[in-house]
Length: 332
Ligand code: KG4
Ligand code: ZN
Image (tube, rainbow, N blue to C red):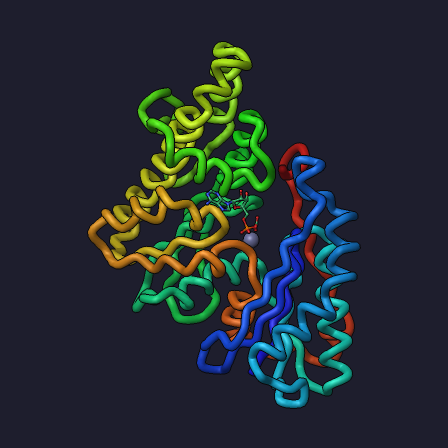
């Protein structure tokens, strides 16, 4: 049994995963208060992790019916993410591992999103292409073996896909996080009502979402406040359509480039209903994890840790976190 802890952003998460990869419990405590600021406030996130971590870990153990003494290892996200937020999980994980005299494993957050494909109802069998799209990352990668290893084939040149959803939602006066809000509103709208760019001119397997965001900004300005409000469902549906079209286009390019016939999607944006239904029409097996394994969670961290070695006592003592480096501005 592995206890996994994930605190890289604004969700305090703990899970118990068996050495065969079955998820015994998966507790996600989504923090409150960030929506008042329109995005994640790093200091607020770290403080709330401090308040919540012990309860969330206790709950994960109780739900799994596992006593601390039965744990064989602890897995913790060591980056990338918000430094202060990560430190809470790493500190707690280290302390618990020391107290229980069991090893610690450090997991990369993106490895976790890739490993979530193994928690899908139909996990990929053999090499596969993976689209990982979240609030902080958007990338296409190839996964050749059963381990956590992957090779990046393309990534975003500017905003992440989830960030584009969040910024678009703010322009439409919806709350944070924006992805679920746009997804809900879009179901009442016409995806063909507005034409937003899909970055088809960006070569290769890279993504760009700054154009679609700017285009939404100009459209909202041109329409004016009242018309934007009355047509918000059409705007949301068209905006979502443009983002998902770009994701699908790069997936198709990636499948062609690699010759792979299997796909996995992961990260918060993989919770998007349009993306989930569209990948079903590609005519190949697609690993689509349950929603709770797409957005940040600790089960995926525990699953990724199965393929990782225990840290030596020295490495455990020295374990530091890897903060996210943003290209420009603040994420969200
Ligand atoms: O993986 P995640 O929980 O955290 C990061 O690692 O960033 O992803 C969060 C992102 C947010 O930007 C959120 O708006 C987006 O995933 N998201 C969605 C949906 N649910 C969450 N985007 C589109 N449609 C959704 N249903
Ligand atoms: Zn994530």
